Image (cartoon, rainbow, N blue to C red; front, side, top):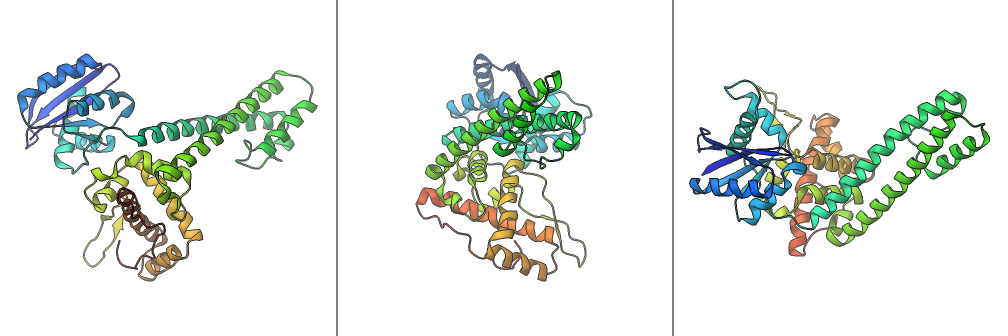
Length: 353
């Protein structure tokens, strides 16, 4: 099996071919355009059985991956953190496109990565939730700017607005009424402009959340039935997982989510440390579910108490719960294809996750 590592850029695609031992065989570059993808496919035919390893930079590599899958090529996405790791352990120093492409190929050669599949309905979900997160991020920045502007205009009034509430309708109306009572000025006009934009962004974010909720009712109702999993967490899981059948087991899915424990034992001490790999957005969604379950779900609280009784710290117990949740989410997603998914989390046993 020849692995073709790809370092994608907006205008250029750099590919390095390596053999089964990770030895570099050839380097090829092409424009990041459909004609460039066609030239790479013609060049790759010399290698016979091959696997394309594409660094997971979707905003510049999506067209390449769609072209590869349309040509019935085998391909995998390689997380960027894996690329950085294998670039550091390489013999050569420095950074260049061929060095990055070589690191991508060696990472795919040594790591068990799930195959890339053609995009399905999850792409729509991902586009919507990514867009909503961008809008929320912009809204938060504008809220911060408005709060400091109000503090400059009237510190006493600024202190009456609770933290992280400036985008709520009640407080938008409160600030708008205050601005209407003041004399004109540049600061007041800027504050009014920021307030209008915040209100618009908050309204659009709420609209997108309702759209995602409706999509999840159709695509993943079993996730919405999971205690602690709201429509945004469910949408993020669907968006980042894609077709769950590309994972051969729940353990492979746990590695993808970054919830698989990493041994950190020595002598008679047996511990696990935080796994910083995997898809961090997916990991964050599972973390939100775990924290919510720790507060509202009796089975999860019992599980955490049992882990604490075994000597785990609260952080370690939460990690174990996240690993259990990853296993359960995988079962729910696989079960959706078999029409036999269970709607609730069963009480996990207090054994090592």
